Amino acid sequence: MKNWIELLSEFKKQQQPVALVTVTKCLGSTPCVLGSRMIITNDKVLHGTIGGGKLEFLATEKALIALHENKIIESNYTLGPEFEQCCGGKVEFIIEPMNQSPELFLFGAGHIGYEIAKILVDTPFTVNLIDSRPDWFKNSTLDESINCCQVDIDNFKTFRDVVKWGKNCYILVLTHDHSIDFEIVAMSLQNDTKFLGLIGSKTKRVRFNNMLIKEMNIEEGMRNVVCPIGLQVGGDTPKEIAISVAAQLLEVHYKNED
Image (cartoon, rainbow, N blue to C red):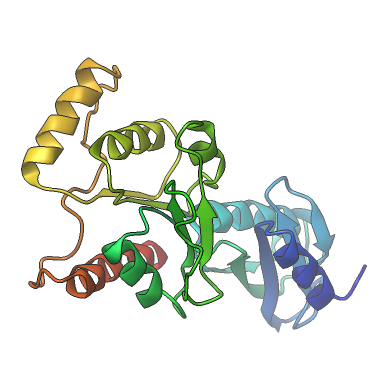
């Protein structure tokens, strides 16, 4: 097997989620040694070993949970008859999900969108700033870590294709056009996301709710959409609103890690 650091590097380049299992303690007779490592993919492909048998089977099952919930898991087992092993030792290990950073797809590169993107630099979030206005990013001075995406207003498929849907997907909708906002919200409700937020008033929320139910046959309406967005900290300048929204996103992310 390749060095585990090299393997993790390859998986990171491919943006493939994996779980790293590391043995942190061995007491008595065990089939592995302290520091043994194993990398597990979402489809249960194993790289390396922590001793095989039922211990490895259970570690794999725990690893899939860690990947699904995107959280670190610590486990310990005493190797008795239930493990079909009679060595009687004890093994402790930690499972760390990798390559599952939260990714924000921010539709609308206006004043607030720009401020949110800038504030989230050097946080766990990968930021994609998206707009449909021609040449909108031509003179952008944003940090190079922010991915600026131009989509085609005449081809809504480009809006859908730019997003990596899933449990690490955060969507913010702040475009210059309410009709575009509505289409993005409807699209997002039909895909897998961790967070879906829409800028706007309570009146806008009610209007969109009725439209989603009556026109799109989306029974839950706006139930799973955060609107208005941002923590209620006060302030109404673009930067102050952006701070409240960024804080809300970080709160959701770190609560997920608890």
